[in-house]
Length: 144
Image (cartoon, rainbow, N blue to C red):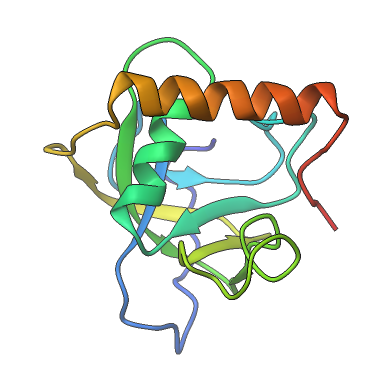
């Protein structure tokens, strides 16, 4: 993730609010860019950055992110085109119920959600167990 790299917002994007959940400590103006190790699967370099229009999906991102410290949820704006995240849409689930997207372009942080509530411990543990099961089965994130 790079800090304060200038890039203009993408024109004609939805006025919808977008979020990104992580454990990285960033500030407004910083950019979240592709090219860092993924939080999932084999943890290889991610070709995309991910964002969502639902706070619940961002909470999952913050809770499941790798790294030390507490989860954080940033309000972000895409700097380029976005597309449906195939890991959470028609390739695996019908439609896009989590309003999850991805982009090859950076996301600019414009704020932080500080008063969010995490999932109950049993629900979080069940999700982590499911992700571990997928990993053991060799099921990877779709990165094409």
